[in-house]
Length: 229
Image (cartoon, rainbow, N blue to C red; front, top):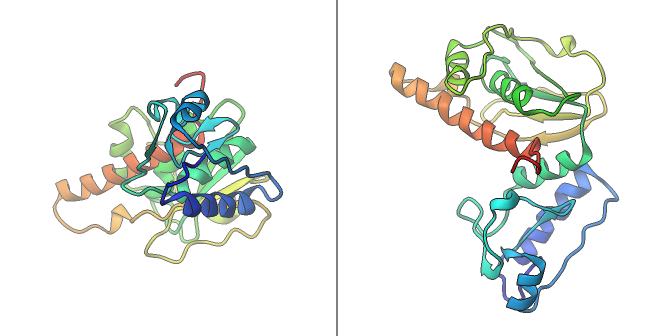
């Protein structure tokens, strides 16, 4: 939904169409021009642009009161690609989600732990890497701080992933990401490698916490349960 004078409307529509075209080819995308405050109130539109997937706002029920004001998404008027991707993938109800990075030691391990904690029953979550190493103790501690235990995890190679994978989410930023050859929906959430941060223990710990918190934010959207919002 877009207000007539919204400067970010066209960019938002283009981004939504791109994501839907990649993850759900053929799914309809409806563009609705909202002409006035009364219509925005009737539609419950919390600013422009507003994107809904299966009737649910990208930011959930806390998106704000109805109105025609410009919305801000992470400081921009256009919803970030990951937010649209997470909402579209959620609507497709994947049964097996795989997180990939190179070493399967930090980002993908934390993503697996968070996703397993938040995924609905029946959804399988895996992680792997193209050059697996050991699970970083900082990753274990960072998740332990939010009540998620991955102390029993181990790093795994691509060949150890079992079963059909519905969605693959790569997390590499500085490195060349692993390539998953089997058919699946593909998303890329490039996040900095906290294991590459130099400095004292406090600086390294904060790097893991930042990535943990961003993963938590994104996975919460992916597995959001409207009944719990």
